[in-house]
Every structure is written in structure tokens, then in C-alpha cells.
Amino acid sequence: MAIQRKAVALISGGLDSLLAAKVMLEQGVHVEGINFYTGFCVEGHTHAIRKKDKVKPKRNNALWSAETLGIKLHIIDIIEEYKDVLINPKHGYGANMNPCLDCKIFMVGKAKEWADENGFDFIITGEVIGQRPMSQRKETMPVISAESGAEDRLLRPLCALNLPETLPEREGWVNRDELYGFSGRTRKPQMALAEKFGFDDYAQPAGGCCFLTDKSYSVKLTDLWASRGKRDYEIDDIMLLKVGRHIRPKPHFKLIVAREEGENNFLQGYRKQFITLRTMSHKGPLTLLDGTANDEDLELASKIVARFSQGRDADVVDVEVTENGVNKSFSVQPLKSDEIQEAWRV
Amino acid sequence: MIELDARRLMCPMPVIKTQDIIKTLASGDNVRVTCTDPGVMQDIPAWCRINGHTVVSSEEIDHEFILTIEVGPN
Ligand code: SF4
Image (cartoon, each protein chain N blue to C red):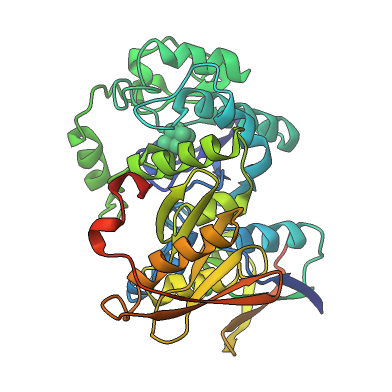
């Protein structure tokens, strides 16, 4: 009996990777999934922050895909290593701060390492030629194969017929005639294949797989780097970019103002690391101050925070500022809405 | 009973920590994971179902989510 070959499938949680893995399973290949956590993934944590999002708890689509396929899923934390991909992408960025091509090369490379360590024969992805403007083009497919080191052990079951034969096809581990030749931005062939396999509850994320494709998130990240004078970040930084209103009234500090109760609770967890502002005379949001601030800055910050409190129309609002466990109080008149300059909003 | 403190971590980090500790354990061992992200109540059981482990109990106590897992075969 022929040896059952093993493939590791990059599982993002989207439809394409689900289908690619299913096509391999249908051919009798042993498939296990791998999912990389960069810190920017839309999957996962943000639903835990905003209260309104808790009403309908969001599933983790990568886990859902694996469960639907009946395969194991290995989730790998690549937060630290990913920094270099994002900060120095050899192939540049897409429309926003998304270094998709470098990201794909990196992930396929990691999957290749994992495959080697765990005795897997080849790697599969759900890539489709022409599906995404930056990373999924006919010219980028060989670049990913070569620069990741996966070479012809990288098989894309959904568009294989548009590409040269790979090792699994040549060796007869998979039957090329049962692979697909999808191309272009249309989703119709994927939807038809999903129907054939009986998948009907799959995820259709509007903004792709990560926050780096999001314009407003990218603006906040660029602002963070500009204000610090260096392109670097910690996981807390990238989490906080997802939460609250970000207002930078001065180059050396920014305010993160909670927009609702869930964000308020989330920001509570950061009280010890940041200067915090709270309105005492009126109900208001918890605010973190990121950067450095003298008393004049703190007074301006207090006026802004007061603007977002229930005392916005009052003559005076009392604000308590806490830094390293020491409290200071400011009694301020809230800024008028037109005094909060548009340019301050990040 | 092995204890895993995954407080303040947001999903999928508690799942990753659970996965990494389970790799070092033997079939039949128990691990108790304490988390603050409510997402774990969905994600950890899903991960366990996929990978052949059993969630023995899950409860919420004072805004903390505590799951006890029995490690499956392999
Ligand atoms: S959208 Fe994000 S995770 Fe997906 S390839 Fe681009 S940079 Fe990587």
C-alpha cells in the first residue's frame, strides 16, 4: 500500500485555506493545520474588548476551519519574529502597513521548518493567482516558493493548474487532474467548491486576515513610530492601537480615551504602566496618557478628557491624574468640541 | 494538577500557552488554566476537541475563567 503523505496547511480562518486543505484530504493526504499569530490578527482578542461585541461571541475561524475539516491545528506565536517582517519588509508594503509578500514568505518558511521538524512532506496554502493585489499575483508565486525555502514542496491546490508542477504532483502524491485552476478576484469558483463540499458557515472577513490592511489602524501605527522616533513596538502597543479614541494634542504625548465600558475595563489593566486620567466630578471615560507630560500638558489633557465626560457642558470638571501611584487634581473647563483640533485625532 | 496562569492574555495567546504546556505533559495529566479573556470559553474547548483533549470543567469565578483539561493520547 502506498505511504500516506503528509501536508501541513496554512490555515488563516478564511474560505480559501479551508478549501485547499479539503482538496488535499479528498485525495487521501494526511493534513494538519498551522496558524500563525502575529499580534495583528483579526482573529481572536478584539472581541473580548468592546462590550457590544460580546453579545455575539466571535469564534476563532482558524479553529473553526480545523474542526470543520477534522484536522489538528497548531497555533504558533510569531509575535517577536514578525517584528522584523513588519519593520523591514524587503518587498515593501501594500495599500496600508501590510507587508503581505514578506509576510507570506515568512509564514511559508516557518511552515517549511515545522514540516521538516515533524516529518511532513509538503506545504499547502489557499493562495489563488490574482486574488490579492500584492501577494497573490502570478509573478509573486515563484518568489514565495523560492524565498521561503519551500521551493517545489509548496503546493497551491486552488490554482495549481496555472503553475508549474510541484514535487507532490510529480511524485504522484497528489493527482494534478484533481487540482484547480482558479484565478482572478472573483469568488464564484470558491463559493461553488464550498457548496460542493457542503461548507456553508464559513467566514468572509471583509478586511482580510489582519489589522495591517486597515487604514485607520495603519495610521495609528505610523503615528506611534513617528512620535517615538523609531520603528519598533511591543505587544501592548499593538493591542492599545485597537482600543479607544487616540488623540495627540502634542507631539510628545497621546491620549487613549475609552469609548465604552468594555474599553474602560480593558484600559484598567494598563493603569500601572501609564499616566491615567479620570473625571471625578462627573462620569467619564478612563484615559491613558502615552508619552511624557508636564503640568501644563496634564492640564490640557484634563480639558480634553473632560470634553468626553458627562460634564462636557459644565463650567468646571475635576480630573484626577495618577502617575506611578501619585495623584494630582485638576479643575478645568472642558474644551469646546471645535477646540479639539481635527489634526489631533489619530 | 499543573497550573497555567493565562490572566491578562488575549486570545489566542491563552490557547497557545495551553497548547505549549500540553506538549510537555503525558496522556491523563490534568492542567488548570486561569484566564481573564472570556473568549477562552469558546476557543480552548474548540482547540481541545480538535486535538483530542478533554475539558473536564469550565467555570467563571470573579471575572476569571478557569478550565481544567485532561490531556488526551499522544
Ligand atoms: S493581510 Fe496581514 S497576515 Fe495576511 S498576508 Fe498580509 S500582512 Fe500577512
